[in-house]
Length: 112
Image 1 (cartoon, rainbow, N blue to C red):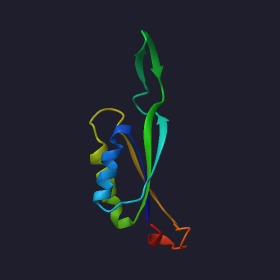
Image 2: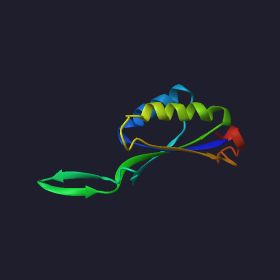
Image 3: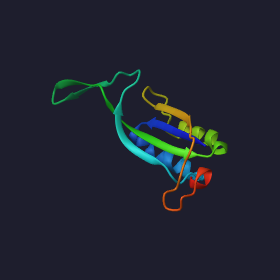
Image 4: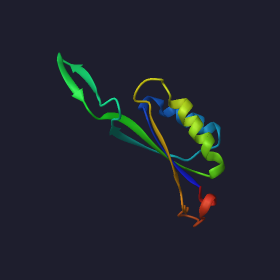
């Protein structure tokens, strides 16, 4: 099993969710987060004053998937969240050692 973590722009969440649903991924966790990467924030003007915003709003997705499905999940997230501009985000793939569905106590891929 794999654990996919993706950090994307907030306005891309619906496209990513729809893309994942189309390949059979119906469960994910989305969290509103703030962060920055190479872009180092951005400068905005509000009521004539310039503000440097260092932490930008992002969405962090967490998805547990079977090994066989991982590559397709990464492809869908990448294609659906890409704008071609700086700050599109990152995708991380980690090995997932164990999973358990609390209600039924199913374990492994059956718990996904």
